Amino acid sequence: MKEKTIIDRIMDNISVCDNGCWEWQGNKTRNGYGRIHYEGRKQFVHRIMTPGKPTEEEPYSLHSCDNPACCRPEHLSWGNNSRNTKEKRDRLGTHASQKITREDAYKIKFLEKGLQREIADRYGISQMQVSLIRAGGTWRDLEYGEYK
Ligand SMILES: [Zn+2]
Image 1 (cartoon, rainbow, N blue to C red):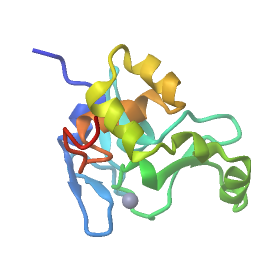
Image 2 (cartoon, rainbow, N blue to C red; image 1 turned 180 degrees about the vertical axis):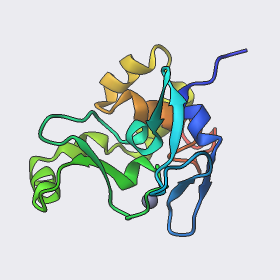
Image 3 (cartoon, rainbow, N blue to C red; image 1 turned 45 degrees about the vertical axis):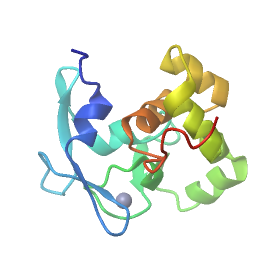
Image 4 (cartoon, protein in one colour; image 1 turned 180 degrees about the horizontal axis):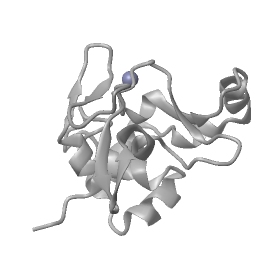
């Protein structure tokens, strides 16, 4: 049996809300942030699910939905306390790399072979995005046979 990835473990423990948030159902901090034991320590679920990596300039995982328990990658981004962060990021187009077409998502989900990292490179997205597409976390409504 294939060992569960951290993404699988998280996806097993969320509930999808009407507003699109993925609310963590497991252990939470007093402030409402989800926590999970991973790589030998307790980590914040939303930080694991935030696309990309934190940097010195953008060390915090920010919720666009203001819901601390939410761990939906589309609602999360790295930033800092500056109010300009979001605008700056939009200007620089950091998020453009995460945008793929429905057909690309289909290929990634059903047709592509090889390592997730290689597939991610091929489409210019993160390995996390590939993993999520395959786990049904994003592009959930894709059905086999939709494209040839
Ligand atoms: Zn949310």
